Length: 340
Image 1: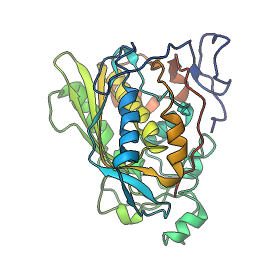
Image 2: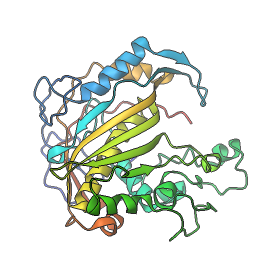
Image 3: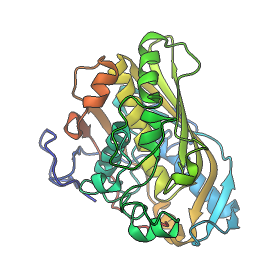
Image 4: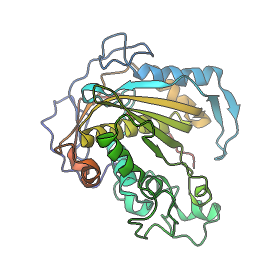
């Protein structure tokens, strides 16, 4: 779903671009390439494309996974604790899948919504509809939240990132100064205590789980600053929808790492993705089999146009228009249904 507006400045795209006027992606011609699943290089020569890690994991799930029932009733094919995925972020690299078009505006709008601390699907809906189903009247009533206003998701990601431990009231309450601002603490440590081993961002709060329309799938991130002042992120995801969710999650945490590095005066280095339950929904199998036949193309790059080094204050002021993505020339999109 495209955002309603986009004033992001880009240079003129070549005639082969598949981007649209409402998409912030400036596409340049991308060469096709294949790769080994273990490389963390930013190179896109014929033997090292990191997207193959994702494709190989999908293939392994389809071949070796266990058929399991799930919360949504759709049914899945699942593997537990597969090998971690590693994506280089050096040279402004953005690991955004190329074997199908992934809607980057939705990812960025959602991430900025998380950062803002909002838990309102209603507020996000004009920009992207990806949380509409979870905040619908039908979904909330099914979960027993019959008195909750439509669109109120409960104390989900943004609330935990910015107000961990505060008492949740509703999606319209001002929580300024309440709870633990984990994101601010992360930024402070990146700037002033970069060797700290407790640079943590957690969305998993057991006390708040019963109030959430959807408990966090991507639940825990740890950040690490190297001696060369490069920032890496390790994400733990308890539940990973390989068809729809993981392409969004990888790009989102890559963007978050770029944001934190930029605003802390560091360089982004790597995203490490650790998964618990990696699954393919049964109604995604045909679409993913089609995707597996495609050859990955070069990763795009992302540039944040603000000054940098401004800490949490700069993070909080970031806007959609502050991001420029170049070189995204993916294969066509593949439709998959979201299970709620």
